[in-house]
Length: 429
Image (spheres, rainbow, N blue to C red):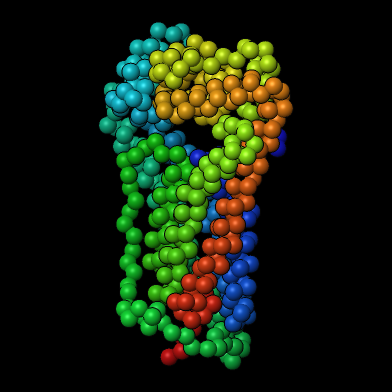
């Protein structure tokens, strides 16, 4: 795997790779260190407990959060296959929205269009479509259960099972320590309760189940949903109200910084690059630096759909699957080709996404062709795009790994009058 491939992967905010890099290699160790540092301001004993709890919490949660949904889906997919259905069939093919290319794709349309093709994999794909067309409700229920299992199971483990186990370990270790040394105390000064600041005594309740009939969400979308459930779980299993409010603060911030902020940072950086460097960096760096594309631009042989019209786009990707445009679109997840080279009729093509890609592709080709030095232009565009991706990771990681934890402990100080993790504090009776 090349450096460009790695940068391309972590720059795709619709996948889990940016989350993996930020969560495991930057965010987790930073949060653990900050938790220790903030608690050390008042108590070494509580700092030790906070460090251990945060280590378990961050890394076990990350493992479940990043791997739980794909693992659960694979298990459910095996069950669906045993029932004779192919989970690769996209339910969007049943939709009737013509603006999304329905006129040129869909269950009926694809069965008719691809049914006459002799390739074995095409015939198998058509058979899958026919089976699901005749048993739509059954298939929909299976995908609904798959979605529910993939989001609920990891959420329950992360939000409702892991925290109590983590807390129980702390209680056990503290009890052992107190038995060995009865004079050891984990807290030295009293602090006001949250009700003293608000004048209210607020109680937190459990979460409602997050079950949806939406079956075609990306893994990263399901992770966002599970993160919402995780927030409810962390709040409802908190050891006291102050810890619940701190958990609500940090989990809400985490959701925003993980799933909302990076996309806006990427757009802002790409827009700034156009103004400063006069290069279009909308495309992936794997495309921008491709030698075959550069040679094709230089020789004037780049093939691009003539317009973003639905018929023109579908005709192009079906008649010219080997073209650089079609292969690039497939590599970027816009469409899928089977081994035979035929587009997979079970997959739904988002026309708006493909049209956007086509326009960005054409803009880059035209700008490069008129630059005077195509190779230099492409190299510059690739370099700027890679820098933007790494800058995005750096900025979002700083916000998640430093700014948010610091803000969390300032919030804690405001609410409780102490930097100590509120769940670890022994209240004086």
